[in-house]
Length: 148
Image (cartoon, rainbow, N blue to C red):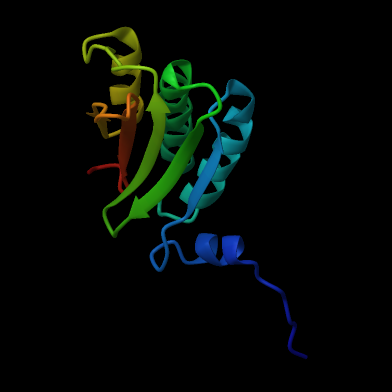
């Protein structure tokens, strides 16, 4: 007896993360952090991460999202995109901000991000005229093997 199951496009993206780039946009507000953590936990679980490395990635993404949300324009969205290959998985978080994020790479929060992720990059695009908003992206990279 063959069992038939209906697979949604979101589930298909999760089931074959290499074939697609899962992405989600939510309101850039703290009340959306549980949704974001759930997405990251679900998608990242399909990569070859140990439970502790998966937990580290979820915590790093939560911290990065909190940084972005604290600087996000009112009513803006926070987008979370995944990218992965045989060696790493990346969580890419971006939003429109009120100004440049001045978090120092020597600050405590940046140290936490560096400890939880194997790579952390903050990219910022200054406003262009007549646009007056900054775009900020934090990319977190986690190696799939503990020795990497």
